[in-house]
Length: 145
Image (cartoon, rainbow, N blue to C red; front, side, top):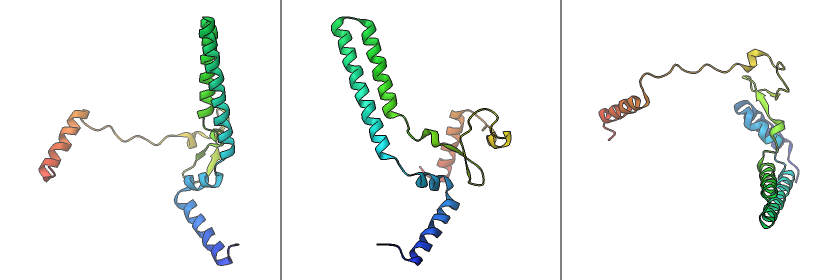
């Protein structure tokens, strides 16, 4: 059943509000998920792990350390392939105004201003334990315990 004109307008307003409020979430929702690719990657990686396990067992039966080591490396490579993030190449950089720019290809592709990190707050006074003790004392004074 198609949407009415009023429903389309409401949906567009909701999308614009979401984009203004949380641009990162909105961009992730626009990209969607590629479940078929993810499932294929997981199955292929699992198959490579099983093949690597078979090579390890062959190395044990042949009493060859080298064959076992190769099988182990095949297993690790299969696990890494199965568990890696398939959307990594699509990552980008979010600007302060909420726009997303593609991930930089190399050095110097973005201005130094956009790569600056926000300044860290000044370090707190005292050690970790001293700060914990001060927090404990404040809570006891307020009667929280």
